[in-house]
Amino acid sequence: GAVVSQHPSWVICKSGTSVKIECRSLDFQATTMFWYRQFPKQSLMLMATSNEGSKATYEQGVEKDKFLINHASLTLSTLTVTSAHPEDSSFYICSARADSGRFYNEQFFGPGTRLTVL
Amino acid sequence: AQSVTQPDIHITVSEGASLELRCNYSYGATPYLFWYVQSPGQGLQLLLKYFSGDTLVQGIKGFEAEFKRSQSSFNLRKPSVHWSDAAEYFCAVGGNNDMRFGAGTRLTVKP
Image (tube, rainbow over all chains, first blue to last red; front, side):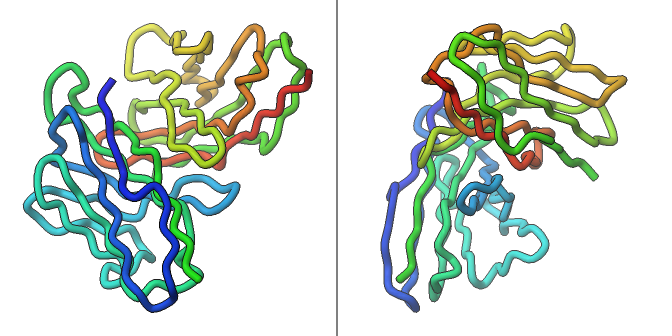
């Protein structure tokens, strides 16, 4: 199947700093990528839909100035957690939807990034 | 609005026993339905999906699921569970623009 990577896989930062998480589709192009957040022992919650060449669409209750999304190319979307605080600690998972080919329109998930804010 | 309900938070089965994980959905049109498995600290792995056609869907690792429109259900089954199946299982509905996940069912496998 198609592969999505995330970098870093885990990060620890101090409160008040910003953290950038990358999501890459390795062998397919994705105009649309999604960012999810997962708290311990809970389900995935969609945070935002990232579209290449346009602004991201945020779900209700998600602060767009807090979680900056940049979809720089058809294979890369980044999520920047600005001025991180301990309550931002979570598991962040991205997915990418294939634009064409055998897996057209299917979503593939990255392995996730665990963020811990001290 | 689309939503997914997984009634069972935690299920324990003995190795070799059969398994059924329940999933009910609410969706305005014909749904795209998915089952994913997540091991601790890992991302999601797709087990199987239903878009259309045959309502009994075969997936990887010996899993299958049956779409029942009349019951708005998409239950996951496996005839004989292996210890390596212990994980968190998520049912999801949607597809193109967003995907909504159920709360998950944690599967424990007893020796």
